Length: 122
Image 1 (tube, rainbow, N blue to C red):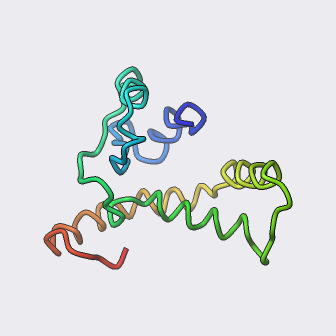
Image 2: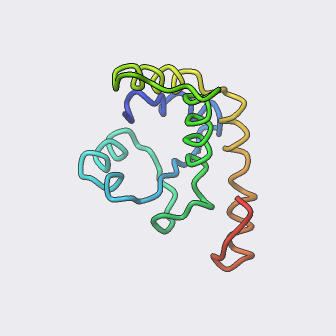
């Protein structure tokens, strides 16, 4: 999944050459293969607590994708049809959404710090 996510091109394009990748430290994200991928590709990770949705704009992407996949109450008859819809939606995430979420990170970090780790409006 990480190899297909275009991290190596989209990270620098959206955030500049000194970009930092953010993930939520869930168990699957801390797997040996995942850590090796980041290390082998010289990807810097943002260090923050596990399961911190206020610092995880990826949750906004998942929400957008779910709304797109099930738009107009669409239901799927097979797992393959659902899988295809998910992959098509993933391939069409608007660049503007990614740019908006990336640019929101300083504000998110600032608000989390100001709230001493408490809940924010994100």
